[in-house]
Image (tube, rainbow, N blue to C red; front, side):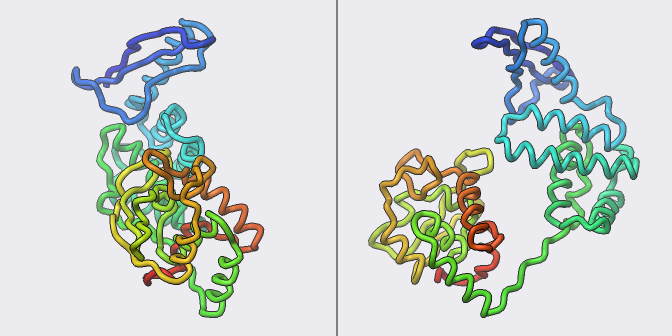
Amino acid sequence: MEYSVTSVYPFRDRWRANFQLSKDGEKVPRHRVRKVILATSEDEARAIALEMAKSMTMEAASTMAALLDAYRRVIDAAHVTADTKAGYIKAAKRAIEHFKRHPQKCEEFDREEASEYIRLRLLDGNAANTVRQEISVIRMALRERGLTDPYETVELPKGRRRKFDTMRIDRLKALLETIEGPMGLAAWLAFGCRLQTGEIAALHTNDAPQEEERLHIRNSVGQDGKLRQARRPRTVPLSGNVLRRLRTHEFTVMRKDGYLFGTTGSYANPQVLARKWGAISQALGLDMTLNDLREIGGERPCI
């Protein structure tokens, strides 16, 4: 892997540098922006860009701990949302600490070692979702280095679904009934229609025709804030609470603050929705995310 600084230029009161990685003479396609902005001089911008490009090659790393430490710097430089970046960096740090206690060479991290990582992390008392996030970072780092990903043939740990009896479900419905406005609708879309937070954020006025008692799920908003096609495009029937709330929803409300059903070119921010719901959930003593509501709702038509 080779790297080079392609340009250095002033940007407002700072300096910005662009760099490019290449392999065998071909540019390496990247989803992240390769820019350094916070330099105070031209020389500093060039030096930082070279160091960052060098760290992104990660070819000097021979152990898993060193590889993940290098990839942590890649994540820190990536053009993603702050929450996403923080989550991946924390996952990388947890994995680094594990490999410091259990040294492992990169080239020897095979299927058996990958399975052992899962076993040890679960044995340490970590939740399945926590381990899965760490594995995501490990897989990205291995691919970045050009190594084989052993997790392609390893069964990943599965989280346990919460079990709610009828009485607790009825109490939850009663609490959801007390939530008014767009967030009340969002909660019922998650609980009643099993929509993911990103799918709720992406809803458009055309997705809920007034003359139809159904909802079209076409798109989803990712953690990076970008609109993309839903993983499972579908049409869900509407009835009961969801239909009633949809009929009274103010479709003209702008969605910059996390409200639902915008017009062409506008959609909500899933992180804003999650934060707004988090405050409501805490106030009601629920301690549930929108995705928790989706799991509890179960496989059934909208209610």
